[in-house]
Image (cartoon, rainbow over all chains, first blue to last red; front, side, top):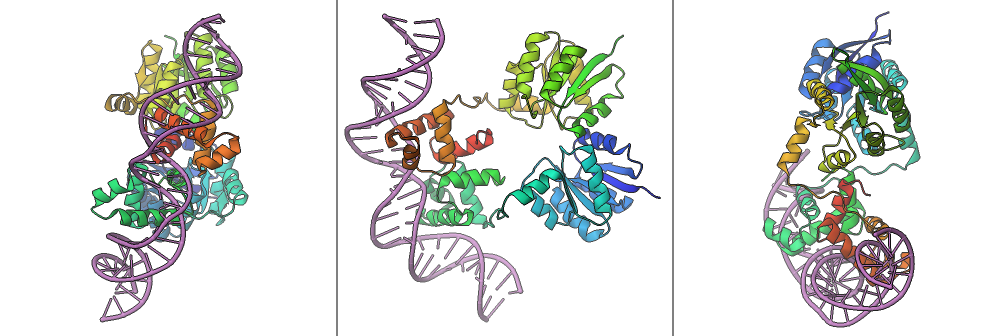
Length: 207
Length: 207
DNA sequence: TTTGGCCTACTGGTAAACCAGTATTTTTGC
DNA sequence: GCAAAAATACTGGTTTACCAGTAGGCCAAA
């Protein structure tokens, strides 16, 4: 029987080598290629047509999310396992929406990695134990709110410690406008002061 | 000539295997052991007496910083290279103070890793290019401020979105006391409002 | 015993954020 | 072109944070 062809996309040599080393003893898995950037990964997937793609979310050029979306559309038979250090529901849900079939943390045990590959190859979804724990344990948290361009600007300025008047001067609008944006931000984040706003924005990686 | 004996301490299988794979082609380096926790790392270092220790900062039991301090005191000939994903001056300075001879990011190229090992083995300090860039580029930022126990409590409460009066009620002190703590926090962080306070605290992992 | 750090607390403010409801204009997407 | 969303702006507030200087009590270390 032909082994599962796996392509590794990760910008860190250490991770690429580590993954190859962990997968090497598995007879039913063959690492057919590695790529260090999103662009390389796209090209390699198109050329090599692997069965399973181990895809780092955090790539230096094209985001893993974009790579995932693109390849899910182009190569429907390709199973994508997202690799990351982030055990956050936000990232899990985004990658799943982008078409990933699995989500594995980089701290995963070798057995988890092997299971992820075989499961997604068999057409199933796979979440590592830590991720399952996260999904089951906490209520479905809303994703980061959808912010308008202006709201993002104002959020960034608030996070830089500027007063509303200062922000208004910089953006050439009225203080009252900034206060409105500010209030809309609080509402969208479901909080009622700046401390919580900034904390959540920081935790969501919006800053 | 005897190769440089290297011990790897990292809780992630992927990283351990990756490091072994990257070091394996180097004739002048011999990986004499691996450990997955701080405690295992301490024991292995004491037993194996390696020349160079590749030490993950972020370990599940004893922090890499503590391991570093302990081994620097016990085994003065041991050269410790800190490994991390964090390119923050805060971590660099702390590990250096704890006795590390080198600091390498986990995204380091294999050549950087090799250079780190040979340099520290030769008694020099080693900073990977990225870290050098960080050290040269920015003025010496203060480390995370030293907070009193009370200040930490008040910081946490502020970050939870509580008003000063609410915090005062909970801690059974006067509002004026909380405002004093609050002001001391702003002063210690060198900021002048809550937005910056929370942002910095979040970025420093204090929340 | 002395000193320094921490904790608590005050006077006397001003600046800024938060709140709720409302409305018009501009921009965007279909 | 039209509807919806975004941006801008207002009234009329109240609440809260920020600012600066100051001081006493307690406790641990020197």
